[in-house]
Image 1: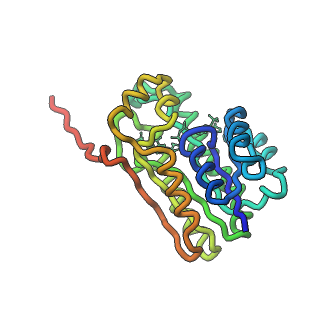
Image 2 (image 1 turned 90 degrees about the horizontal axis):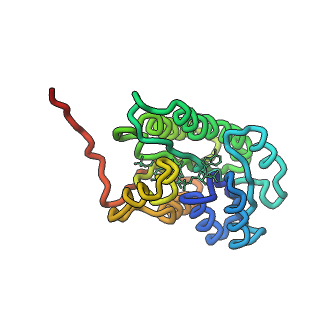
Image 3 (image 1 turned 30 degrees about the vertical axis):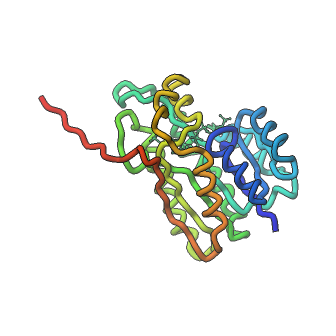
Length: 248
Ligand code: NDP
Ligand code: 8X3
């Protein structure tokens, strides 16, 4: 039977690749994001029978509910939630950071993610479905300027593990995927500069959205008795040796 996934943040990067990969594997996808034209292009490419576009800002409860409470019947029974929509804003040290950037990250990566997850839980329990959340290595390893982004991803990583405990006995599978550097629009959004993005990824051979999408597909299609709790991925050219000392 065809399964249905809800993939948040499907207008670019990991989310878009996930929709393409899952549809290629025979899934139906509800693809969400604010940029309607990007979702329309996905539908045109993959087919309206395979992709349903749901245009809303994840921080807007009313818009989210309007989009998800009236799904076409063939998309209404969701088996897999991919919590992917998210962003970083800025790399300034905490003492110089913009409070609005901090609030945007908390509202998107934490508040919106938990509110959407809470909304989906009854249906996922009824169908013994699955939740895959895109956390980050930034939630485990610290780098300068990571501050609230890192904190929001530590929350995502840990909230996802905590869901396992609450969903014990329901048959719902829960996985935290924690990637390192993936070349997407992430750094453009974070810095506002295409040059900064090109400089960061240049020569690193970073992971691609397709690499993470393949991991999502693998996890989603495992036999129902098997749960991957968490998985951390990095490009070979990135590591986590981050200790520093300052000297007076
Ligand atoms: P992109 O910027 O390419 O994609 C981000 C997606 O999130 C877009 O589809 C965007 O849609 C959506 N999004 C952001 N804010 C909102 C909002 N308020 N409402 C609705 N949708 C929103 O980045 P990535 O693909 O890299 O990021 C996907 C996830 O992966 C994020 O959670 C990120 O933190 C995480 N991640 C990324 C890594 C990387 O190195 N790239 C590594 C580890 C984790 P739109 O703007 O159209 O609304
Ligand atoms: C994004 C990965 O290392 O740029 O979550 O913070 S990193």
